[in-house]
Image (tube, rainbow, N blue to C red; front, side):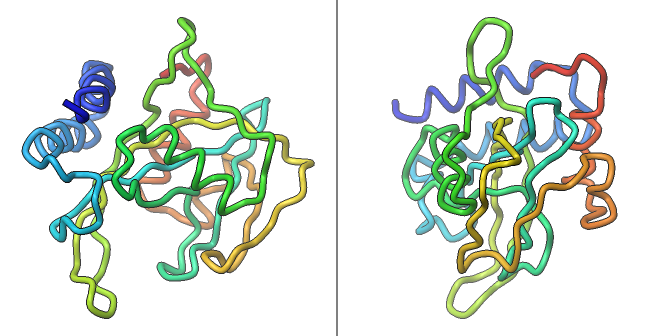
Length: 190
């Protein structure tokens, strides 16, 4: 079953000590993936999987955000899976495409495995012929060199390295603040 690897990652993430809201979203995401073979396809109009990169510098003090053109919000980089079930690869692809960075590196846990950093389920408003739908976003930590030049694409109004502690000034949504708290937690792991 092509969904089993992502289900395994989601179950491992759900088994961690998560806040109640993220735990509920993780459980809902596991149910969603289990029920929909085409969960990674945009053609599933009720919602679909997305992969995001929480890009940080080596010291974990800054994060790279995009001022998303369509949503007009500062967000982490990421996008649609488009059928790809390896959401870490999706996150890396989107991070490269949306930033122009080449030095990207997935952060691994103590055992050397790639783990999920955060999950979030959020509504995307209707746009044109596309109805309102859910994004089931799986987020991974990616490290990059903030001295590497950035390339702003048509998907963004801007890109900026931001002190993690200052993210709330650009986007105070709980989805972002949860990743900030996790990053600022001393000795964090995923």
